[in-house]
Image (cartoon, rainbow, N blue to C red; front, side):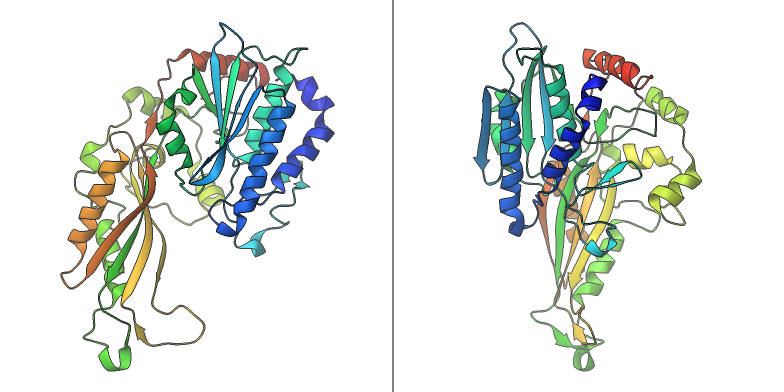
Length: 391
């Protein structure tokens, strides 16, 4: 991108980005459905302003997808740019130093929900496209834009669209700008991404809640049963007890492992500044990179059941639910792991408990061929702008 463009246009760019960030497009909350549509409309208007002859708002069973095409450049390659305009919920708001949807500059950085995931990156890609156009508004290659509004909530609109119209995603390369440098001054290209299997596990042990003063000691407690079940699915050492899971993993190559070993990594700083804990957990015989990049995970995100209000209520809960997810690596397709999870959860439950596993959403792991010519183009761009190739 021409740096003179960003320097010359900085006041305008900051104003436009601030406007985009001010839209509370929280896809997971139904109360913000209209805001998600406003964010999509902002993109539609911007793409039209940039001279795209094709700009469509594609409807489906959820928040709409924004699709656009640059003026055609016959004989040139096609780049597909993907991003998302939706953001995560902002709770707890009390932890924010400034309002989440009022972009605020502090120490030369812009703070607001979506600045780094993914509105900020979407905006940068749009302005990079604006900067490389010629005097007639034509880019040097064909560019297609695909922006969705359900990346943060696991919606189905994009799956439906690609399933019905797969030709939309045919391109020479796809650019997804939704991650970070490996470290300051060290650009990175992400060549693999763990997949996801997100589910709710519900346990029922009674027909109704009971009083512990009358039935405590004999009535099976759903929360207790659920906690024991979860503990069986993943032991204290971090091992996931789902049959076939680890045997199916395709491990990283020796060359990849050697590359990881060469990356700068300070465990104490990582623990203190990123993890913000006093110890790391998981399978200790594997490195931190292997645990976070090359092995499946099982995490508990929340548990509900019984009484959690102020004061005391001596209830024996009849039902309890946990939200859990597995991160998936090569060799672990989402559909197969979903079946294994359901089977393992039922096997871990006692006979007196009824277990229901509801798969909410998921996706397969992805691994990209780093020998593709697009990587050479990226390296050249990083060397020109950042002074070094990507890791």
